[in-house]
Every structure is written in structure tokens, then in C-alpha cells.
Length: 214
Ligand code: AMP
Image (cartoon, rainbow, N blue to C red; front, side, top):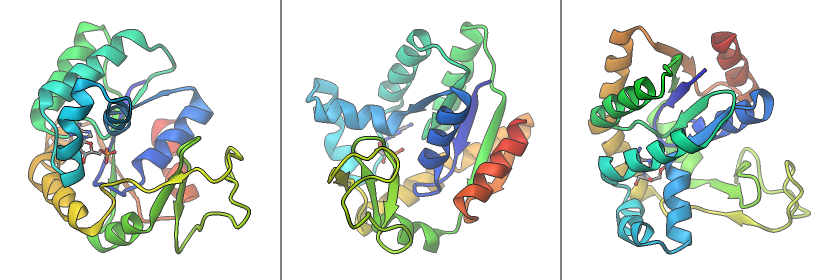
């Protein structure tokens, strides 16, 4: 079963993807994580995309399609969760072609709906555990006083993303509305789109996704 989690930055795609990995043994393919990894390991490609990412712009289709193709052909599990990919119509077409080539198909596209004001609040207060990716929020889920991640127990390794600031977020939202939101119509027309309320409590969102996936 291969699924896409579609939604603006801060909609909760990564949080829900991690839960599906833990409970269903699926494989999370986050192009954002792959690009951040390339940056921190200092690869040529990582250096090339760093400034684009910090500004909140999209990196080229060619780069992200290449990253996804490599993972699709090397990783094995109970299906892929595409998190933050595709983000353009060209990427959606490329994904469809890649899956067909591998004899696979797309099961569902889950659209995580949230309003913009909630996104700004979520993102500018967000930090994640460097060990497991658990997401914290200064207001709604602060980092534990003992400095230990509630999920993996790692101590004092909480990171704020360089692009999680208000200015970069505005660009990311603009990129989302201009280039990614047309995918909602694209997948709706294909009959693949299933919306969930991304503003609901994390557990409620999990339950809605579970009901869709069966
Ligand atoms: P994310 O972690 O999904 O919010 O992605 C962080 C940044 O990585 C984005 O703002 C883009 O600069 C870049 N990025 C991630 N996925 C893609 C994609 N599918 N297409 C283009 N750029 C991407």
C-alpha cells in the first residue's frame, strides 16, 4: 500500500507518517529529510540546495525525483508513505510513472487540511528531537523539563529547523499554494483524494487516517 500525505508545511505530515511507520511497518519517504541529510553530510547536492531550502523555495523537480527513484528501488517494506513529495504536477507525473515501472500503484492521497493561522503558530514554535523526529511545540507540547525526549529518551538533542521562521514560512506557504495545491484537484480528479481535518488532536487525526487505510 503506497500513500501520499499531502498538505502545507506544519500540517502534521511527518508526525502522522512516523506513526504509520511504527504501527504498520511502512517506509516514510520524506524528501525534506533526505535533502536535510544531504546538507548536513556536505554532499555537492546538499550544498547546492541549502540556500534554496533556507529561503523556503522548492528545489528542482529533477533533484527530488532522483532521490525518490533511488529509495523506491532500494527500500523494501509494507508500502511507502510519501511525505512532502510530490510537490508539483511534474513530480506527481514522475511518481506515477515510477510506480508503474515498478509494478506498483498508489492507494490513497490523504489531504491534511489546516488553516494558515494555525500553521504559522505551529511552525514558529516547533522543535524536533534529533534522535527520533518527535515534534514538540513551545506552547502545546513543550520540551520536557528533564531534557529527555518522551519518545526515545535521548537527552538535550532538540533542533529547530533553519527554515522554521516566519519569513521563510511565508515563502513556503506561497510555494505551496502556487505549485503544490493544484495536486489537490489532480488527485481528486483521479478519485484518489481523501481529506482529513489536520487541526484535530493528533490521536483523532491518526484515527481518521486509520479509518481511511483500513
Ligand atoms: P519539508 O521538510 O517537507 O518541509 O521540506 C523542507 C524544504 O525542502 C522545502 O521547503 C523545499 O525547499 C525542500 N523540499 C522538500 N521536498 C521537496 C519537493 N518534493 N520538491 C521540492 N522541494 C522540496
